[in-house]
Length: 357
Image 1: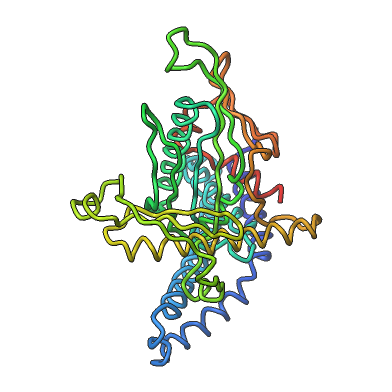
Image 2: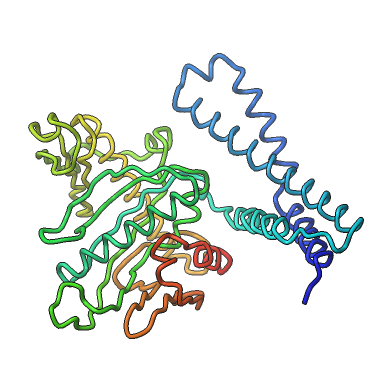
């Protein structure tokens, strides 16, 4: 069994190698350039660009500060252990190991859009109320995961089932590296359990499809041009909560891109123009994804990039009966803690998928 001194030395060794891989010098240089540009009055004439700059400054500062703080804490702990090898510091070692593991995860997130916010959609597969209930369970799972990460979520569109559950839901996740962490969740999720909707409690298999997109800023979306004649707009009364105005006026928006058949909708904002803007942004993100998928078909050797979700891309099985197990079919990571997973404790699965790529 390792003693505390050996554990601390191993953590320091991992930290040293990780520190070298994080390109801290280039990030510090980038931070100084951004801070200089933020002092330029002309920048603030373009609010969207200024917002991006200030967000990047905040993210870089937080990352650099955590690396510096973690290094100092590890060195302090080593000094304490060297003075007294019998000192009780197991709790501190565990917390520092957790912080180091989070930093290690960040080192895997080097994709073009990994730092962006995410747009997550979950769609019920065939199976009626069973599949819709499974979609609702997945929705709660991701909300709990985001909550644990300190990320904010906002519903863009949701369609409830007639009896129970959700037919489909789309929501944004706002938080640093949220897209990078969640992009590997895209694919088909399979549930096996005793049916709570069947009097005979028969074993039932349900499927739900998860899609994950990066949330582009307006300056990014402006580069994606869509001819107006390719857009088919529909307006209807929202079914989601949002005040009397939402319920009485046709504020909800459904948008179809006629050349591709892609359909998106937004209904949770109070005013139609807000829903129009969100729907168009979502459509542009999906068109970006479609283009990316076509490029990947031509470059099958590329790894670590987003893989479009489809019913043929089953990534994980959640078995609640006759035994309890969640297994990722890509990384082979599995656990019997089904309750923890469905409560959003997804770190082990997400980290394994990031390392795989």
